[in-house]
Amino acid sequence: MRVIAGQFKRRTLLSPSWKGIRPTSDRLRESLFAVVGERVTRARVLDGCAGSGALGIEALSRGAAEVVFVERDPRAITLIRRNLALCDAELPAVVIRGRLPQVLDRRRPAPFDLVLLDPPYGASDIDEILAGATSHLAPSGAIILERSRRTPVTVPQTLVSTRQVRTGSSVLEWFERVAVEDEN
Image (cartoon, rainbow, N blue to C red):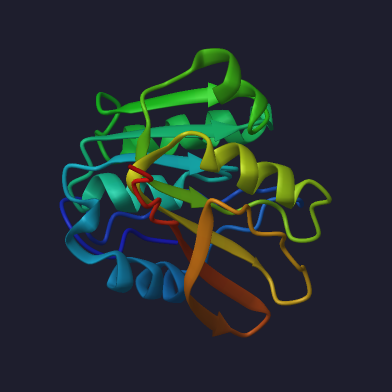
């Protein structure tokens, strides 16, 4: 696993040595960031269900102002910190151990411009994770959800799906906030 582009291009990241964490493939990350484009530059990014931290580190490499990594597995927290150290990227990064969305609800961080979600395939709480992340999204923000093709998702009413990319057994789905018309 490596960083694909930007400041940390070609840096090799550590992968988990245990089952239960499936890092986003280089190919899928490349597809994701090809669509995100310059939107990541100077963005405040949430890497939810961060696993190895590869998505958030790619965002940092491409110019994100800050990335908040949220992960519940303590082994993965250690892995994220080690991968950040490999890229000398500790300063614009915050690593939080906890479960989405509860950890964000307690901390009440500033809204995120870009939310990257990669919950475990088959996770039973994917709808709760998506809805919780939505409440921490900036008005012009976007959420990108990686999920199994077999896992349906209930989209909150405040979001609209704008794009899907299917690769193998994975789906990357982009969500934007629904424009709210002024009632006056």
